[in-house]
Length: 132
Image (cartoon, rainbow, N blue to C red; front, side, top):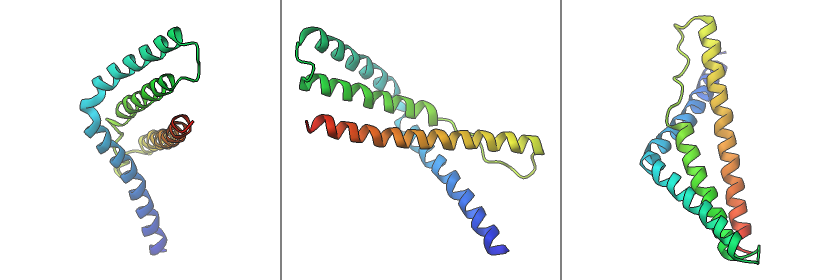
């Protein structure tokens, strides 16, 4: 029984460490938030201007501008989502508070999973668009 409890406690700790790592990365990228938003606006402008001026919808400049915009949006969203994470569930909290805190942590785990999947999809898209 103790080994199972210790394993469950270790798994809980590892899940908290995932959010903590994402939080630390977001805090390190926090100074880039404004620059990322400005670069997103620049990338969006590049996309619009490229679409208005070039007749070829497959132009390399358009592909680079789209990827530039998407990566800057990814950085901005990542920093905004994980700059503050909910605290761990404490044993002295009441039953309802524990349930609420676990729901919040579960929501953040789902957000972390969505961000990781989106990042992997963006890497795949980048490789496909740049190697065309």
